[in-house]
Amino acid sequence: MRSNKINNIDLFTQAANDRFEKHIKTQSKRALETINQKIDWDDLLTPIEQKLKVSKAKTTEAGRRPFSLEVIVKCFILQTIYNLSDPRLEEEIADRRSFQIFLGISSGDSIPDETTLVRYRKTFSSLGLDKLLFDRFNKQLNEKQLIIGKGTIVDATIKQAQATPSSNRDKDANFTKKRGKTYYGYKGHIAIDKDSQIIKRLEFTKASVHDSDEFDNLVDYTEEAVFADKGYANKTRRKKLESKEIFDGILEKGYRNKPLNKIQKKVNRLLSSIRNRVEKTFAFMKNVLGYDRCSYYDLETNRFEFTFAALVFNIRRMISLTT
Image (cartoon, rainbow, N blue to C red; front, side, top):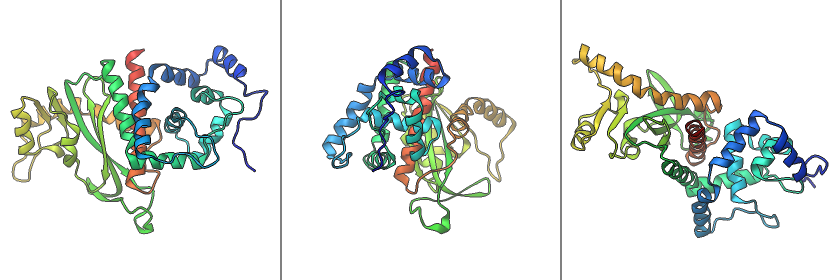
């Protein structure tokens, strides 16, 4: 019978982990140590545990000792940071001591296998625990005064579906057009803090949902300024920002019979220098995390993936801003 326990007692003892933690300074180890130190895990996971109890969600298999919620969440963080599949994550945990120390496991402890990860991911997705986790972490960032709140930048990115349209595997994905090109998949919508560039809010929708439809879900209307691409421009929105005395940093939009004048073009260039900061967020997800398309076949699970990418981005910003 297959076992996924760490059972090499010569290598994977707590004493060996302690020696590694003390003497060997790998980049991976230092990064994971910093994450462990800077996150209040009890505070982060308490509301998740409470919601699981209320929902009576079955997160364990009969006859198997349940994993702690902290181990599972840390597994998903590792998976996101290192762009690992479920089977590969299991292998890496068994092989990499820095992963074991981060998870707090040693000889005799079981490693969450593919089935366990799939089950927890489904539970998180169906109950919205991924977004609850994201919001709870942002609460910690607020308490550290890392989210300034003076300005918000709103944008969206298209995430190509894992399935092809003809396969009928993905019942949620659909089509959109951008610059004359057709895309099949989803959209991730975010609002970042202008100063810290931390992602404050996020939404995840089918690709056909227009970017501007999620604007009110992303903006607090308590900030001093809001910046966005010209796709978000409309008279009603501008009037609402004006009525609340919020600086309107939405780019001007030209029309067929009314092109932009020189002053509007100059203002757009100035606003774009601020608005473009949000592009670094999407570039991090794609180029650093390897997250350039969806991995799953439904909206909820793909939202989970997008939310954890956003969470990891915010963890990175927290480390950058506090070290």
